[in-house]
Image 1 (cartoon, rainbow, N blue to C red):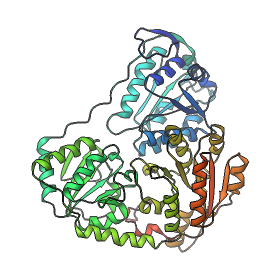
Image 2 (cartoon, helix red, strand yellow; image 1 turned 135 degrees about the vertical axis):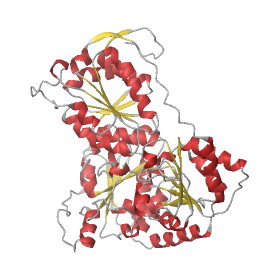
Image 3 (tube, rainbow, N blue to C red; image 1 turned 120 degrees about the horizontal axis):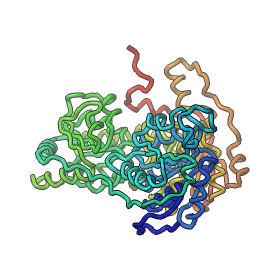
Image 4 (cartoon, helix red, strand yellow; image 1 turned 90 degrees about the vertical axis):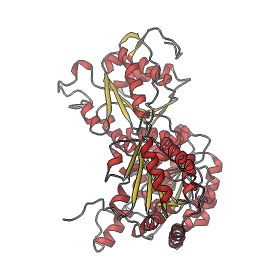
Length: 553
């Protein structure tokens, strides 16, 4: 089998070779995964392309899929994982659901039972009653190739789907006998993503008119703003509008910019604004928790024609990408003669007051400052769901786009460490840190072995309070301290990491943390830092949010 992407005539190849070739033709350079009997022909094809296609084998299927997710988060390119069917795919679907919640292009490749046994209910190893139905309950694109000749077109369609509109994962499956079957296969050229719709000129003009007339405009951005940072900066500076960044949008404006706001002071700025431009965000938390329905004129830009209507319709809706929509708005504002304005005073006051409150929250403030000083400005931070990262997502200064990452609305525990490994594979030029709580870290701790085996230099920072800290705080504050199922028995994390062959140290103060982290990052080796912590300030007390447990009626 040749690896050239310019061949247009059919070539005889196995189904596995067709899959590997299609990945190469779509620019894939890494596959995270675990081999198994239904994937033998596929992994043999990976071996043939080993000089062009790296295989990073992991210790759990969930870890493989999370690494693909982190790869996509850090690079914007497709993260690819390969796992056996049945339990392997089911293990990976936690990460697939997480990637879907964060709007990421992830491609899962899985096997099947033999093609002539699918749906028969024989009890074959790794058999599911309806594997495609399971996957389609999580994501939109899940397809099976029934012949090697179908592979190139199906995978071209998968890549187009993943990168068109709201980016999303896809899962492709193929039975083992077909992965091993040889047949003439016609390579397929990659399909370009569908272009963003052009917004209606009349709606753009109306939106520009309303924003130009606003006395206290505000811009709220989510993860859809990635790669449109220059466009949002131009509109924000023209309007003098604070840019309130969701955690997934952190770094869109550097925090040194006078218009850069996290969501924490954004809550209070929202209380005073008169017109809001909402770009590339589901808007759910704000719409359901920040109030003022009907009091704030809202203008939305979103690529998803369904999401833009939720949880309530805006006054003006532009269905297009952030870059196209903001570019059109900026041009309309310029044509109307709107020149750069200063930020409105109430917003500045809201930010200053919230920053003062956050600065008083020790040891969170001290530890966050230490992290920021030790990490280069372009360092990548993968923040699991911990007491510390709840604070860091609002209070840590970020200087670059695509540098602070969270697991989307799924808030999946254990995501950060394997995702950080995938990010480092995608961006070896950047320093990468995974921020983990002791509870979540143990969900994917086995991937320490993957880091050492493949020499992936990520530093895991484990905040150890011997508990599921967020839940324990809720039980204390809302249920009279009736603690159940929250206290943990942990290993010696430093000793465990050293047993894997990596550097590991204990840091008990912010000063020690800063010095230790700087040293670990300079080593450029897999490493771990454990930070023992006690009870932390309750950051959630400052956050307005809809209750995830539901509302009593």
